[in-house]
Each structure stands twice: as C-alpha cells, then as structure tokens.
Image (cartoon, rainbow, N blue to C red; front, top):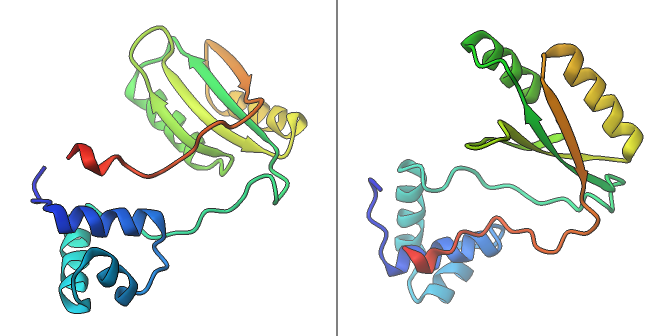
Length: 156
C-alpha cells in the first residue's frame, strides 16, 4: 500500500462506506475531528486512489431487475485478441455487474443482473454471437443473503 492509513483515516473511510452523502460536518463529528482536517484527509485518500468514486446503490428488484445470474465460462481461447474481444463484449453489456478471471477449472465468472430469464437468454445469445466460448453455465441466484461493498477496514 503506497498511502499510509491511520485510525482517523479508517474512521473516515468507514463513514464514507456507510453513507457517502453525509456532510463533512457529520463525518467530522463522528470521527472526532473538525471539518477542514477531514476534508484534507478525504482529498489525500482520493489523490492516492484509495477512494475511487462516490455513487448510489439502486434497488434492482424495485426497478424490475429480479434475476441475478452467476455465469461460469470456460474457454479454449486464451490469445490476446480473443481476450480483448471478450473484454469489450463484457464492457459493452450493462447487465454485467462484475466479471472476474479465475484460477482453476472455470476461466471467468460473471454477475449478470436482468429482468428475467428471457432477458438473460437475450444476453447469452448476444454474448456467444460476439465471442467463442467452450462452455457456459448459468446459475440463478434464488436469494441474496448478503451483499456489501464495505471493505473490512479493521483488518488494515
């Protein structure tokens, strides 16, 4: 880690992870500091790349995106041009919330959020028309038990 994170930084980061819409005054009060030092620390953390962006989380089900699929992909293609084409295909698809290259028997895992199974099939058909894959297994999430973006800062 290139930036030094102290206990106050951890508290600020915890507050921002919990609710980034809080005012500087609120964060400063909760971490036991004043507004200007908190702002300077947040700026330092942004500049160092620790804080990547601030955003909001939307409720997928409320918006009608009721189906979450985890897609396991095996490929026999590992050349740079195939990988670039695959990466572009994933980046062009807003349904893909996460994509990971894996070690082991499965090459990639995708988290795909769609309205329903029919919408997943449309996604799947487009994907396989754009890139060659050896095997695709789709697993439908029946229930989301835990979801967080909060890192365990106590482990730092």
